[in-house]
Image 1: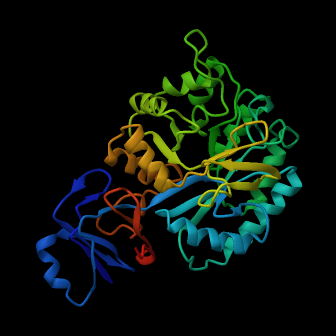
Image 2: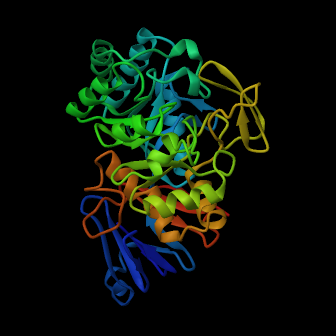
Image 3: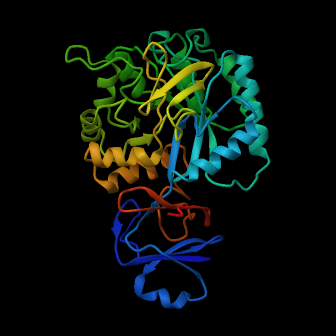
Length: 391
């Protein structure tokens, strides 16, 4: 067991606590108590957090990899272990793997490989993989983004059944375009299976998108990006998202994909409860400028911007750590709300909020300790310190 004491503040994220400390028990979760009681725990491992900010660990539900790892390629097990270690250095305690593939056979093979790794019920060296986000293949070719159009096709329930069976119950979310023939039936099927249907890579008009978001589509993939834009006479998908009343919407936390003013507009329309901060990271995240491979396409990273040869954005080099800073420092979103978007909201989206995504007595000890400049000082997963900055 350990005690984190002396923090500047604890963001739960439903409230901001001061003059409180946290006791970490691997089996019983955490206990938040008045700082004056710390003398009761002299036998514990005492970790000073003076000047630090304690928050729930970040949960990234949309990432394609990072630190040279590309989900779905290479040795899946080794890559996942390496990513788990690296992700923890960015404050991430849990994540979904965002994957796709050139064909149903390729997708199923990847899913079977990951399902076999997950079944081993191992102790992860850092952040914990919480499942899979299937981005496509049911996307609109007009909004293909960094996907090859040859990978994309119309939804098929039979194909979906085969894909879900290959994943062994690990798919949490599927992104698809609602205007495609059969997309409504596919979204309804996913909802019946307890899987989130997310509106993504869509050229739908406002009416089609709004109807989808009032139906079985409960979530939006990387808002503003790879979707029909807002115009005052033709609001498009972006307008449908801004006018929605119930769905959650992803926000890529870098200033390349979204202007800070657009972040602020989304925040004002949806509020802190319905925005989910994501990295949408590609393999070059956390590495120097260079050329990387993403879904069998060459991506060049220059000045932290990842693009295809034609200039199309191809994922981001953001981390959840840097994305949080972007929201706070550039979009001027309050830190407490930004933390909620990075922790509780994604946990709730994938139905993990009972144990993680917020700090409360008895909850899992998934914690990030931040410096005052919002860089990561320490990451704790299930009560175990998996990363601590040495500087």
